[in-house]
Image (cartoon, rainbow, N blue to C red; front, top):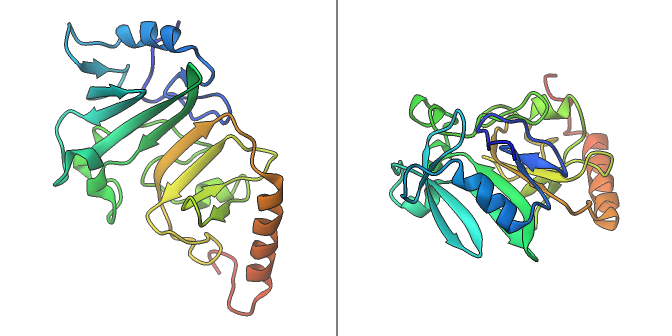
Length: 205
């Protein structure tokens, strides 16, 4: 199988960092062995930093050197296993960037793949230029409509992008499940109400 790549594009319903959804765990493990550094628990994807792996049902990749006060906050990649296959892949911005965006220290380690033209630390308006985003307050994430689906993002500001457009991406997840149509209809109605309100203006106005 192809090697995992730190700058591979985000493909909804399919892959992130070259890790394909629905891949059996044993096949994923063989691909992972190509990235192992010697016999250690250190791994390096093509064009990526050295990562440490902790495995407990799923696969959690940490940055080699922690930037925050708690190492557990500096997870860069999470690969979830569901019924023996890869069910979700999520990349995260280092916690040191939680309030100030991608700084030079984090630039060297954060996942470089993009969804549309948007990567970590970049404004969600780059995504909105291509598709609508709907805010899920339960998951604190933003999802596209069902014509795209299979991907969600988190940002530095937990709010609807129509109310607060100056948000940047801190997490990107790809998964197999379709967006719940019932929930989506409610989210679309909320977006319509916001846009029809006197307080709302198109971003940039």
